[in-house]
Amino acid sequence: MSGLKALRNLFVLALVSSLGVVLVFACLQVILTGFMISQLPFGHEQAYTWYLQEWQVTSQTDAGFPLHGYVGPTGAIEGLPVPYPVTSHFGFSMDYFAGTKYHTGVDMACPVGTPVTNVMNGQVAFAGYDGSGYGRLVVVENDGVQSFYAHLSRIDVQVGQTVEAGTVVGATGSTGWSTGPHLHWEVRVNGTPVDPMQVTLPGE
Image (cartoon, rainbow, N blue to C red):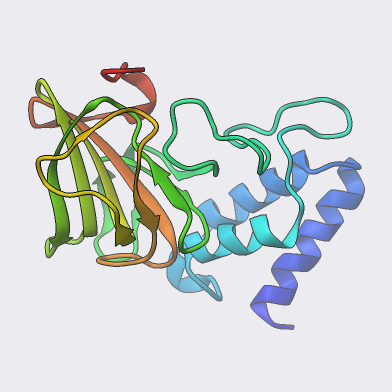
C-alpha cells in the first residue's frame, strides 16, 4: 500500500468514527507531528495541502464545533496573512534541513499562488530573493516591528512602498529552503523574533 493511500485510509477511518472533520484533522496532526519528514511519502506542507484540497474543509463541523485555525473559502482567518491553518508553530520544532531548531515564525501550508495579505500598516523594507533560506521574501516595517512573508512565488510590492493591513504583497510558493508550498510568516520586534500569534501589530 502506498504511503498516500495509507494516509487516506486513516483519514477515512477517522471521518467515519467522528461523523465530522475534527478527528480527521486531529489524525492528520498526529501523523505529521509523529514522524520525521523523511519518513513521510511527501513533505510536511505538501501533506497538509493535499488534505485541504482532498476534503471540503469548513470552519465548523456538523455539530457546530470550530475547526481550530481555519475558516471556509469565503473568508480569512482574522490576523493571518492567508486563510489556511497553521501547520508549524513558533518555537522549537523539527526542521527538514537542520533537524531540531528554533522556528522563528509560523508556517501555513497552502496551494502555490494563494494571495498573501499584509497584516500591518507600514513600509516595504525588503522585496526580493533572500539567499539565507527565505526564498522570495517581502518584509514590511513599522516603528521597529517587521513582518516577514517568505517562500513566495510572486512579489507584488516594491521597496519603499507604503502598504496598509489588507494589501496583497505577493503569492505563496515554495522558494528557498522549503519542503512544499507554504507561507512562513515571521514577526520581529527590534530585531528579535516573537510569536506572531501573540503580538499586536500596527494597524490591527
